[in-house]
Amino acid sequence: MKTANLALRPAILLSLVAGLTVTAGLLAPPSTLAQDGPAQTVGSGSNIPLATNAPDQYVVKTGDTLWDISKVFLKEPWYWPEIWYVNPQIANPHLIYPGDVLKLVYIDGQPRLTVAERGGETVESGRGGKRLSPEVRRSPLSQAITAIPYDIVASFMGRPTLLTKDQVKTAPYVVAMRDSHMIGAIGNEVYARGIGDAALETRYSVIHVEEELRDPDNNALLGYSGMYVGSGPVATEGDPAKLVMTDSTREVLQGDKVFPESVDVNVDFVPHSPSSDIDAGIIAVRSHTVMGQYQVVALNRGSSAGLEPGHILAVYQRGGVVRDTFKEGGLAARRSRSANFGSNVQLPDERAGVLMVFKAFDNMSYALVMETTHEIRQGDRAKTP
Image 1 (cartoon, helix red, strand yellow):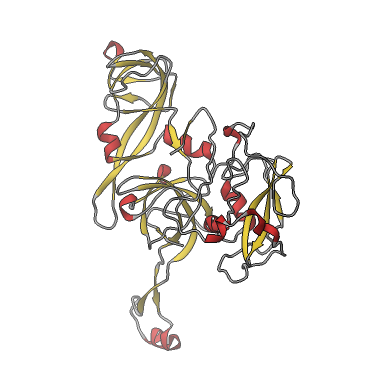
Image 2 (cartoon, rainbow, N blue to C red):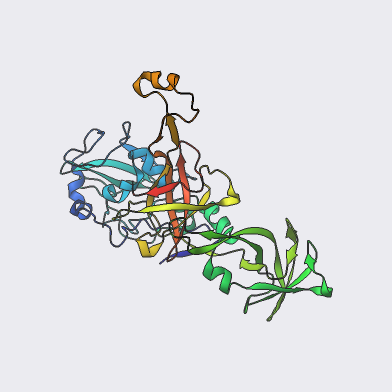
């Protein structure tokens, strides 16, 4: 599994995730790319919903994400693994870079997306195109397109505000402040246990553990919310190690947790729908506010329920309860003197957005809000789309 350090923007391997059902057409020989055709809303003989105005081709731009590109061609981006064509003639066929030209073609009536040009060089297509010999691409992996905005996820992981039980139990922690101070702030020196052999100048974030995160379905303890306190580099190695606080938003306390500011973030995934029915509750939101695009939520389901990075879930707002006083045309309500006249009616859940899971633990997971049409709040449900 590929990982990348926070300091280096990683490559996204657009590999077809193990366990996904991929049609045989994806592995067809390059000569089958001859069947070009007009864009369609739904591919002939398939259930893949192409975007109404899906272009014949698209030039990948710096700053694009795989989600953005998927939306160009598909109504529902989680169908990406169904249309991505693996051309065996291209070195590293799963990597997409700025400058690459993606082409929408039809193979046996099925829509397929392939790389027509690599940075301006034509790829063998079976129609007399220039054949590129497999070789190591000169573009650095750090320029490749990621599935989701990497910096947002990496920032969250480096300054976590949602903590699992295991993180709270095992993470390094502040044991004391220099000169017997009870609290720490910018310029203060603090001692942390559990950091291990971290090198000098390695930066760490200090996180204060706050309220419990409970599973709304069975009240089981899943984790805790956390508040970013501050950060600083290692000044003295050892156990405890000494940190010098160079940034703070509130006081540092004994027992606060310590996390590396630069972390390895797994980015080896593509958008896809879960193969089973998922019904998860949003148990926490960052800063306990309503959620918008590119904000992180926690779910009360994880790998034990079948969730994995790249899974797409639709968010549904819980329907409210209203009092129906209009049955029988409202005449009975006029005759009644009771303010509570009428029966309660449960309104249906309404779709409010889309999430992508980027980190799955056993019994909870983190997901990024990709799209919203209405506010997303704690207590809303996330389901297989």
